[in-house]
Amino acid sequence: MKPIARRSFLINTLKIGAVLPLTGIPFSLLADSPEETKSARQENKGSKEENISNKYKATATPDRLILTLTEDPSTSMTINWRTADTAGENFVEYTVADAHPVFVNKVQQEKAVGRNFHFESIMAKNHSITLKGLLPATVYSYRVGAENDWSEWMQFRTAEKSGAQAKISFIYLGDAQVGIRPLWSRVIRKAYAANPDASLVIHAGDLVNRANKDEEWGDWFAAGSFIHSTIPALVTPGNHEYTHEDGKPHLSVYWKEQFQLPANGPANPLLAGSCYYADIQGVRFISLNTQMLEEAQTQDCITHQVEWLHQVLKSNPRGWTCVTMHHPVFSTKGVGITSR
Ligand SMILES: [Fe+2]
Image (spheres, rainbow, N blue to C red):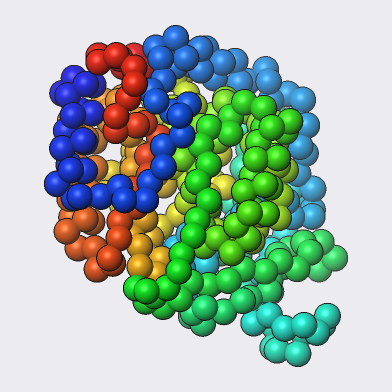
């Protein structure tokens, strides 16, 4: 299927589902020009030299702490963080929040899953854990780490259990990629200040400019700071999360290591960690991977995603559906533009 035909296929699919009542599409995402994508590919080829500086060196103290959505954020929450690869077992301690500094409520401890991350000159370990059996609509306090290397205590609030009529708000951000420290840091903090009770933050692709550049990921985590570890994220990859060293698209080596996401997507490894959904109160949030529509190497990769989307739309028990993807459904740019 030609790229433009793929886009039409997706448009028709979304019309059938009568979706997108809530999705906002940032102006700058109204299609990537071939020049932009070509530039990104060239930049990504140079990532090896760029990573030698290792500006954000991992230590024993947890950093890059971020909450990611689960399929049901009313009773579960996934926590992700990073340490040096020399760190031992890491844990999460959590409890229903109270005002006492040493916590009156019982603090529970669970061991995280740690994965060494060795890429070029980067030596680190990524940790993650999904807390289950949580109480709906409840504020939890938590910290991560081990022994004398704990993070500060953070807080998050679980979603209401059904909440068909419950108020919900979320923050939508796209294309952080350029000017992360001078500009995006102010954008996400202003968004949080305006919406401190948001149930999730949607990052709709191009979080960084060069998919495998550690410094840019470090900038992204630093700019988001405690917001990342307070409100769960729904992350969707854009074209800048892909590299093309051998001419084929490869999702950033960082993506699935630092973002543990719901495994309820299509049965296709090329779509893992990018196609998934989460039900939050009255809304089903769906993440699509439109880069794998643009650059799919086989028809199977397209068919799997389209069929999965149909099934997820048909089975949606919630009153609303919000679909997020990096590419726009409608573009102000000319017909026939592709990322190739
Ligand atoms: Fe893009």
